[in-house]
Image 1 (cartoon, rainbow, N blue to C red):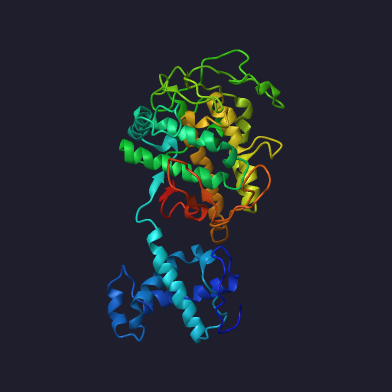
Image 2: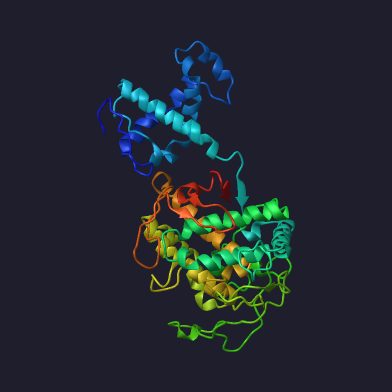
Length: 422
């Protein structure tokens, strides 16, 4: 409501308040109010002047106002009431102020004290690259925890979860939130079980494609400070089920066999292709016919999309879109293991590819943060009956981690994620 002394309660925390309320909130946490009338928790000198202020009894509220000053635009979707347009301090206005202050004070703990910095692979030092690779190899050496009988290692456990949930997490509204959560659990497991002290890196393939129109020369595939290169060439390779020739416009790539170089050349996977458990080597089949889908021009076009659902479809790609997009383009360009919708996490490059997709989602969110930070939509299943997802939709991780609502992973800078991209 917009009356001078009204405070309209919302029936759902997912409702959006009208823009005048945030405008009025802006007055409330204006620079003059925060810096000169209220005590700043990090500036003790400002507390002295506050001692003789009539606002002294509201010290807790003052510190909360500082939090509002910092995070106000981020809490708009969750404000419990609407402020009036004019500065008329009736009882209901003060009630609304207190509600907001309590909300911010309570939610302040959700903001991380420190953010890990996810970097592009080529920006890491060689020591940092080795540390990450060693952590992944450590995960490949630890015993599985029993999600599926065929899984041998903790690394397999993550692949198993993806295989089991593939039909629930692709071509649906939760595609991006689910993978954001999945990457975070993987990153945390590297830390808690393998002593990794860094952050999950990402692979910005546009930096390779814009220069070479190819991924072959990417440092991601270096044999010493990367993940090894292409697979051994198999003439006419058309995928593990020999069915890629059925795809419209299919052009065979290179490779197709075992990856003979790099730190994962001797590692055997236990799961895949598809949902079949088999013991097999890591395979790749580079295909530059799909490199165009990974250019910076394609990234720019993706981030221009006006709302979450259109953005997600434009990023995820076929079969909803008529041509390859960033997500499927990356899987096709690397090929073989990465091309398998179900078992693609068997290639460690999967995590760098999806970290870059997550980074692009975060870029899109930041282009209009107050509107997009909590913007999610889309069907929750591929098959009917269709239900649109909401922020309350719970993300499954099976045995890897507890259920978590989408709202809890929308902001990478907040708990439980606590990271940013640099």
